[in-house]
Length: 322
Image 1 (cartoon, rainbow, N blue to C red):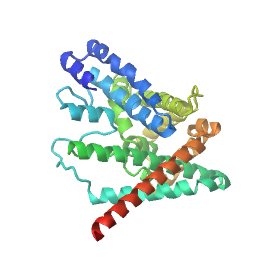
Image 2 (tube, one colour; image 1 turned 180 degrees about the horizontal axis):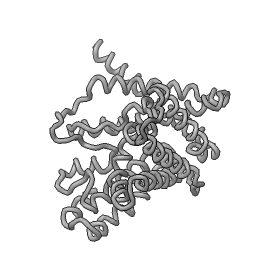
Image 3 (cartoon, helix red, strand yellow; image 1 turned 45 degrees about the vertical axis):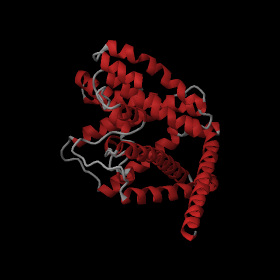
Image 4 (spheres, helix red, strand yellow; image 1 turned 90 degrees about the vertical axis):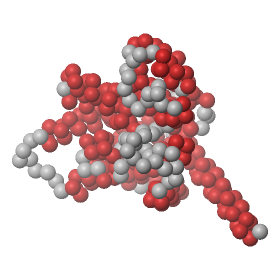
């Protein structure tokens, strides 16, 4: 990353800067293979291959969150981690607000509960399995990303943009994908795919192109999970949702159409996301049986965290009583 910053500072945006950044872009896809655990391989692929790769592509074009004028530590942190700095007007602090810690602790406890209940998943009805898997992925991803954000905040002393915004309250697919779920992804795809395509072919084409690229990148991430060629199911999932978002945009512009109450719209949105995810998104992992290996890794991670917490508590008790 230090080389990427140096190269960007010496070369103007365009093809020349892209060529200068190419060595880094070629190395990034190899790095996740240095991890044997599935979780670490997958998370590192998401952080480095997808998000960091797109940030560097935007840097090559002279856009995006990275700039060669950034201090080295801030440049590397912003490139390698799923974070986005708030505007300069935001108050900086290295400490974590109490509400963040409480939310983080509650989600960690819920995630641990889901891990312990995984054994009864096979006896759940289809809709229960879809909801269970969706909650598991959401909590796991948010906890990993929140941990990275907490580290970045402590290191940089900077306010960060939220990574999720309560996706369980989404009232439409546009709301879910564009404003609530994994906001670092639309933050990368909006300037790199949606806006250029929209400028040339219109908004519907921009939406479909964005979901297509998202599907292809998810296929790549799934390759790091399964180490097998993609089946196209994940891409089909995102193309289906992209088409539905285009339809939602059209309906939103029509006057006189009946619109359901927000509670009903939220329930329908979450049911559609969970149902189609169970059908298409989770299929490559569950079919290979790797979901059991991932759960086993999560159980090991939670056990390690529990053991570390007990040691810290015991050490604190000894200090108090000594």
